[in-house]
Length: 287
Image (cartoon, rainbow, N blue to C red; front, side):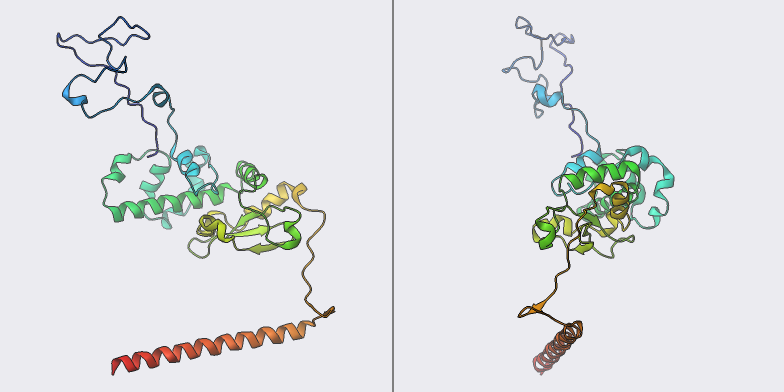
């Protein structure tokens, strides 16, 4: 799941008990196991094992962090340095927040055997996977406010990984946005901050994966520290707030407040009516 494992067959015994030595590019040798396309592994212990091609054999191991951040739908995460995670000071108080903390941390650092999690039942395995994601997200939020973290966020920002501002005025300027959230997990999902119009928006329907992420994975400070570190991204022209008009005349704020209040009262009346109808329906069903 996390690693590209080398399945190269190193040796096997022939009928005389000798250990054949693999020879490269030697077509005259019949003792090379796995050396030709028509050769089959010798011995019943290898009957169900297939040899991989040379390209697969040469693949290097990848860390859990690399696998996780490169997985589909996780492109919004950044790769946190392992040295940062190994420093216990950076993980202060996270043990009290994350279930199965030790297993989750060992998984992130590739210290946990994959087979161990695979032996767990589906429900517990799912809990551990969610805990691992939660722990990594909370660590990422802390890493983002470091120099290395802001540099990684810079790459995501310039690549429009988090999208563009939906404001009509900002959209024409192709203004990139930054992720922003809260500092406590399971409070709110991630939102998008636009440094041009200084507004916060929900992710678009096309960003459903981003919209489902916990806001604590990004925190409330990284976006603003990013603009302090990279002030040249601050636009010289700010977006103008929309002014509602009727026949060219501006609508007074008191009228807007009155309309909002009327709308709110109608919503409350509609909810009360629906609640009464539901209670009446349950009463009739009980009779």
